[in-house]
Image 1 (tube, rainbow, N blue to C red):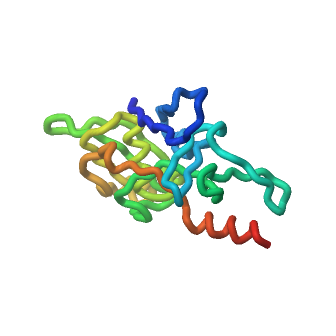
Image 2 (cartoon, rainbow, N blue to C red; image 1 turned 90 degrees about the horizontal axis):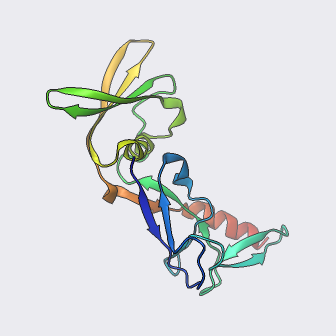
Length: 176
């Protein structure tokens, strides 16, 4: 089991989390309650260090206390293999680790739960941590195996990601 530690950039004094957020499993990759200001490049892990304003739909939205721009929701994402989907929704994904001359199967997953290979790599990191992995796509109907990834999964290739298109869409709806 691996963990990723995120440090808060907010200027609040009494942080309930101790200015550190530890992400321990794949389900926490959405980073609920963590906000990022793309203008100031600051990350806030709780609601104490940010401001709020009411938008046209009478809902509170988070804003940066420095520049007063809207904050965005963030999530974790693996840098490599984004938008690469070498599997279909009916196949199985087999995550293996090399052990001397053979492989040890760590987990067998349904591919329908993953959008691309980058999500499977992030899931593998949270499963066993950094290391050498071999990921196989098994198509049940044709009874075919195909290696879709073979390499090292590293913590350095995990990034905090926000969707700039969603940010523009939300800002545009704010002014209407």
